[in-house]
Image 1: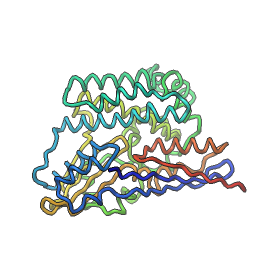
Image 2 (image 1 turned 135 degrees about the vertical axis):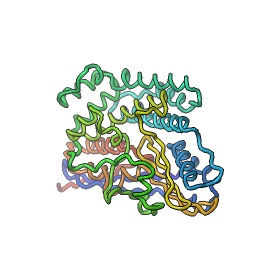
Image 3 (image 1 turned 90 degrees about the horizontal axis):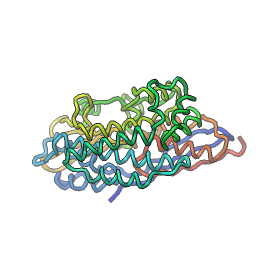
Image 4 (image 1 turned 45 degrees about the vertical axis):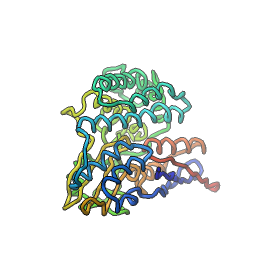
Length: 374
């Protein structure tokens, strides 16, 4: 079973300028089907509810229930949790980087290479040597095949034109980065939706104060504002990501941050639980018989919160990354309007690039109306 309704992204083209953009997110809240069930049944059901990030969802559910004091919950070893999340995140990144982004700009997708790596990541078990070798192959993929041109100089580019020149020297993602930059900036730093800070499970439990209600899960906020989660929030301080953000090219920054995050996943496969890397999964109790888990996934922070009555779930909430990034006042809405579009096709491509950079976990459709009087 998959609870997946497409996102509807509606925009208005006033002559050659994009007007307001809105998001309609009609997908049901998956957590509703978990309430009233025994914990053991919930832990079996959660992976079946989600077509994407099923391992992260399962690990979050188990960790939240264990934190709430559910008896008999068996948790994987921390290194195994870390490696499973990193492998799944790498699979999601490869899908976007090797298939979706090249296709958007007319470059040839790397289907066979993607299929081989995706299969190896899916079959990865407890073999530390296999994980180490696969991590090395992913690091080679990043440096040699995806963005080769950006690593041929020891210094950072001094200008966007130099960034574009380097990006086009090799690799489909480098070419896509150059294409995005040439579309123009998407948002100045002061106008952009803030990036969601990294918080521990205990900090999230304090922030939420209990299992969050359905309204929060559908449109989450932090400190009273919509925020962006995902690779950009995790790697905003990376040198080349920061260069793009400072110049207002947040779509390109998100794409490059995804490349950085793929390299991060490769390192975690080789050295899970390294002391210089934050844990991907964390959990904490909050109040009697209640627990919360947070997982950093490919698309951003995933929260599971549960309250128990003995061995039965009496309240459950899931806050997914898509609800952060496609909030009614979020990054898509903020960055989707106010820029020049010489043609309808150019407007559609840019809106698709923006949506793809925010990476929904469900399909999306774009409805673009035109004001012929503008």
